[in-house]
Image 1 (spheres, helix red, strand yellow):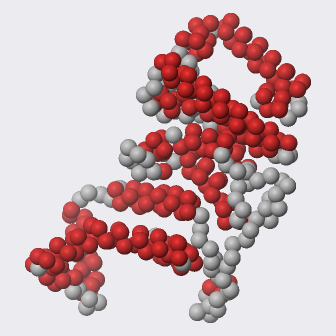
Image 2 (tube, one colour; image 1 turned 90 degrees about the vertical axis):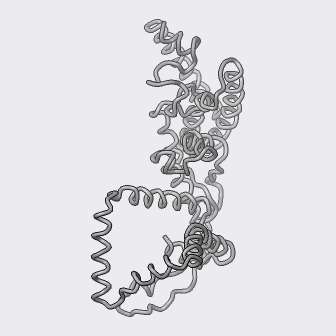
Length: 331
């Protein structure tokens, strides 16, 4: 934080901070010369993490490059170039927000810079990413939730929950905390206090109140339907998390045929009692008709997923108000 103090004009505090860091480092070197040599010279980030420097626990640029298979002087040179770029851009942004009166945000942005450029980003360092939630982002009121939700999800959920487990999206989930730190340090356009949107973001247009169809349910009369489409990034993230929860619950069901058949007999008994037990007859009809069986199997394997997604995509672009209703109903 010494560079931040220097950039905002607190030169004496910056010098004192830098001197304290140098003295503490020298004392640690004198007390533990072997560990200090290993950490600073022999193998950067090779001590203190509790596991290999290329492990997922090391959410830093150095750890990311090591996970990509880079080694030796070439990796260190690329790491140095990236670190200098992140420091220059991140500290400049932090100083800007500090001068704007957002001291906590400036501190959090500086901490995110430290997470990205430190040889080893320990878990306690990653708490700076959560503090970046203090920053306000977005012109619309509905967009204010996007940045906090993304940060909380990236810091609390595993990679398989955040993104599908495949070679293309897997690295994004594996390095979600680092990506959040880089975004906070270098990219997220936090609002300044001088912005007219700081206190008064653009409201979400809503339809006029609809009269309640059922008078004995008073809440329906006060519901006002939003007319704009929700934030796409937030929608995709929440849909992904919701689908993971659904898959987890489905995968936790006991894999026993007898239990399933017992439940099926209970449903059939209820249908017979209600005189709606036509499914058994219809299933036999479909199984004996080859073209009907093949077409229904093909529909379930393709259009069963493709059609709802296509309809939701069309509604999102052309009918945003209807999209919200359809998305909630399909969920």
